[in-house]
Length: 160
Length: 160
Image 1 (cartoon, rainbow over the protein chains, first blue to last red):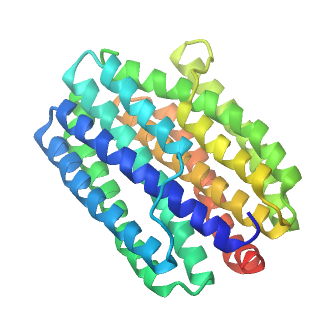
Image 2: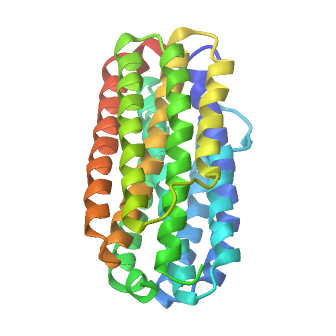
């Protein structure tokens, strides 16, 4: 990796792989969640994530590069933590609280990554790509806020 | 895992392991960084992280449980990404921009985790633990903001 273009392309591929892993994980999380609002939040965010992958496809097009991921070890670890909850929760309420926390860790990871892609994209003058990332970042932040509300009003109390 | 106490203790152990991994990683990152302010930021946060581990020790004491970690796969993935930058960056400026981005992903992971520990701790009435987590969360957010400033004013421009 010799310059910011290389870093940018590498992170784009990393996030592309991460979002694809997440679509699969959210499907399982939505199945396992028991509080209806949480189930719905995972399903809604799964659909949003599919749209976010399409935006990443557009950025690959802008760069005139093939849309291809590289394994994202951080997301693999985050998804492994969600799977651990799915395997080990013995009560519905514990499942929901654990999955919600796992999802918030995922959202924060993505908020960091899109924040970096926006900063690097601006530096590289990739204004159209920056606009696409900003749309996705707004969705990630909204999802995180929704999850915080659900935790406070519905999920954590049941688990306590 | 049967209730919120189990989830809380498991996440405490997970974060304990994560912070210990991070102390080692920040030492390497501080060595590899070339911009003096970034080097200093990593070193300062390494010292803060040692203090954060001491706060986690105090929470284990409050719970009357042995302070012990469980492998945190998410942090393992995040640290692996930082190591990849250390191995593959061919220019100082690329090293700095890549390490800074890796550190911000780590900070966001921790912001999510301490946010969850605070919410669960409140639910469980663990007010002294909550105060300790709040002190750490403030440090994580401050570190993230400092890294954003460094990225904007010093690091990303050099890499472009």
